[in-house]
Structure formats: structure tokens, C-alpha cells
Image (cartoon, rainbow, N blue to C red):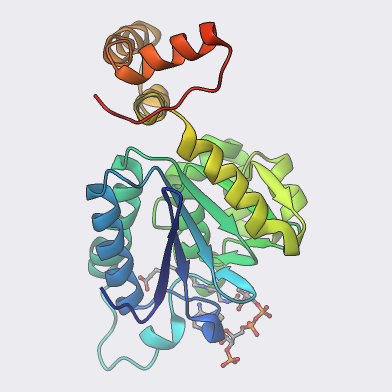
Length: 262
Ligand code: T3D
């Protein structure tokens, strides 16, 4: 499929989606939201993809909603409807996809752009990246899942501080707060992301998927339910060919070759 606002690349089972409106710092417009949704739907169906990377072209990751698109509209913009149509399906899709999703944050992540990065499973950032809530500065409420993810990652008080004051966070601060997993020098980000993604793409797909399922279920779960969930998921993992391969490779003292076959 030909896209206008995103680039898609695939190497060794790692699909990379690059937000590609660099002149507007990859701000999200209607077309980009639609193209992103279409591509994600394709990835979700494609069993050959074992890891997804989301990044931005140029000097920013994503500056959030395209403010040039919404200003000057003849009618007041119905943000509730826009959010239902554009952002929520993307965030829900990220959460329901079984494969690991890495945000490779090459520069500024603002507003819904930062929310998208938070909706990914893991984040690696350029040391020069910065994170700006941006919603409050223009009189809006954090959206695209930010009020769900931020308190879970940094705690309630810090989430409120970030949202109310809107001060940009540096990449180093983001790591310290647990918002970003790893940092890389700007010119090493792509390679570091590639190496990280390749490792995940070689791992046992069912093990990754079931682990993702268990981890995201955890905050809303009590201990007993979570113990039950672990037992149920382990029952599934323990019946996979990859489990047999993993044990065999260990005993043979070799690297396992996981296929994701049931
Ligand atoms: O609509 C809804 O559905 C409601 C939901 C909203 C969700 C949201 O995301 S609200 C938050 C929207 N985003 C922002 O408020 C962030 C706005 N941008 C910035 O604060 C800054 O651009 C950055 C901190 C991200 C980067 O600053 P800087 O100094 O490096 O770059 P700049 O000079 O501000 O921007 C460069 C260009 O990108 C500039 O265009 P120009 O003047 O060269 O033609 C600027 O207008 C454009 N740009 C940056 N952000 C956006 C944008 N264009 C459209 N929309 C943007 N969000």
C-alpha cells in the first residue's frame, strides 16, 4: 500500500514504521492517523513480523496533534469524536498486538506524540530527545492514553506535575523516571534500536506475547488472579514447539532457533 505520511521498512522480521512529516515535526493529521491504523492492522495479521519499531523522520519523533489542521476550521472541532476516530484505535491496537513494540524516540515527543511513545511497550531515546506534555499549554487534557500510562509509570504526583507544569523533560530525566528504557547517542540510535529489536525478533514469539499479556493484566489484578493467569499462560507456553526447542538448545549448549510455530 502506498502511504503519504509514513514510511514502512522490514528487515529480519522487524517492521519499522517511520512517521514522515518532518517539516511539521511529524505532527499527526487525519491522513497519518488513518495510514498508521491501516499499517498496524496489516502488521497484526502478518505472522512473519516479530517486532515493531515506531520512529520519526527528521529531528522530531512526533509533535502531537497537527495544530495547523485544527485551527481555522470553520466549525468548532469535536475533539471527542477526533480522539475516538484517530488516537484510541491506535492505542488499543498497540495494546492488543502480541509482538513487542519499541518506540525509537529520535527527537521531541510532544502531546499525543508522547502518548504514542508511551503506548509502545519499550522506549529507546536519543540523548537529545525531549518530552513535552504540551496539552495543558494549549488548554487541553492529556489524551491518547497518557492519563492511563503516565501515573502507572511515574506515580500519580509526578504525572500531575508533568501534566500541569508542562516543563520539557530531558532524555536523561525520562530514563531516571522510568519513562524510557535506554538512551543512545543521536547517531547511534538507529543501530541501537535495530540491535534491540533483532534480539526480540529472535526470541520465542509466544513467550513474548504471553508475557506481554500477563504484565499488562497485572495492574488491574489481585495476586490470586494473577497467579491463576500465570499458571494458565504457562500451560500454553509449555505446549509450544519453542519451549521444546529452548530446553533442547540449553542441553545441547547451542543458541535456540525459535519459530513461533504452535
Ligand atoms: O485535536 C485533537 O484531537 C485533540 C488532541 C490533541 C492531542 C495533542 O497532541 S495536543 C498537543 C499538540 N502539540 C503541541 O502543542 C506541540 C506543539 N509543538 C511544540 O511545542 C514545538 O514545536 C516542539 C517543542 C515540539 C519543538 O519545538 P522546536 O522549537 O524544536 O520546533 P518549532 O519551531 O516549534 O517547530 C518546527 C515546525 O514544526 C514549525 O513549522 P514552521 O514554522 O517551520 O512552518 C511548527 O509550526 C511545526 N510544528 C511543531 N509542532 C506542530 C507543528 N505543526 C503542526 N502541529 C504541531 N503540533
